[in-house]
Amino acid sequence: MRRRTLTRTAPVAPRHAQRGISLFGLLFWAIVIGFVGYLAVVVFPTVNEYFTIQRAVDKIAAEAPTTVPEVRAAFERQRAIEYSISSISANDLEITKENDRLVIGFAYEKEIPIVGPVYLLLKYQGRSGQ
Image (cartoon, rainbow, N blue to C red):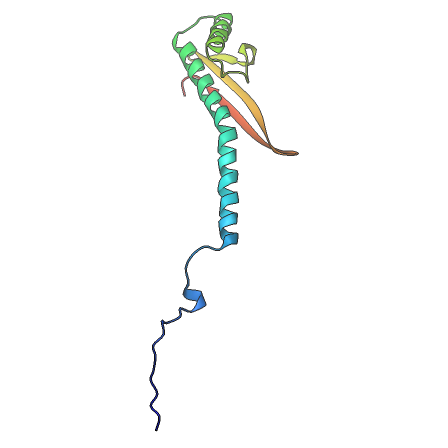
């Protein structure tokens, strides 16, 4: 009688229990993360410009100018100092008075080309004292 010897082999995990990412999954996530990164890079300068305009408007309102031409002249001075303000000029400001307080408002749009005929439209608006 012949004796059989049993050899033990490493257990093979079933296919559904394997972990990891496939090449297609890796490519998909690389494209998604790359696109989001690209959007962040092209949108950041416009957001920075908005906050610069908001700071300039708040600073002008805090100085308490009395007439509309003084406000416009002060904004043009700020615009000359801050080179990042290019979307609006002093003529685009909406200057009103509320409760004996001068309120300076602004609104503008930025179109950012993404790919071919596809654009991202950002609408910005703000007021002094926000």
